[in-house]
Image 1 (spheres, one colour):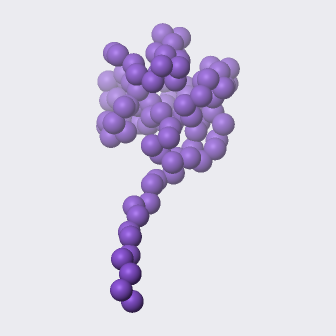
Image 2 (cartoon, helix red, strand yellow):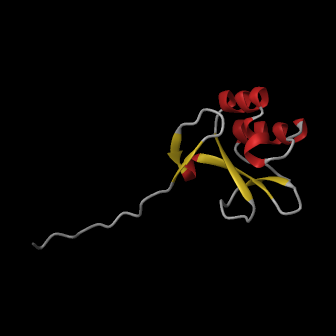
Image 3 (cartoon, helix red, strand yellow):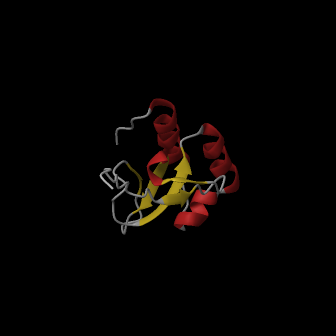
Length: 97
């Protein structure tokens, strides 16, 4: 035998609410609705609340704006100011606030 067995941790898969593609969880942006009905971008992937995932792409952002997929997934109205924060996250990578 003599070989070293490398154990790799399986990365969970999640589906984008816009394009429905399954991708590694860490490749998607997680959006959370807290118990207080606050909508936030979850940078850690561990915040409590109802979560939904979107690809890190402007195309998927445009789809959720048009078909309200994120609104349905989180069961709340998503306003333009949050979608603008999400756009900044996708374009620039970091969001403050």
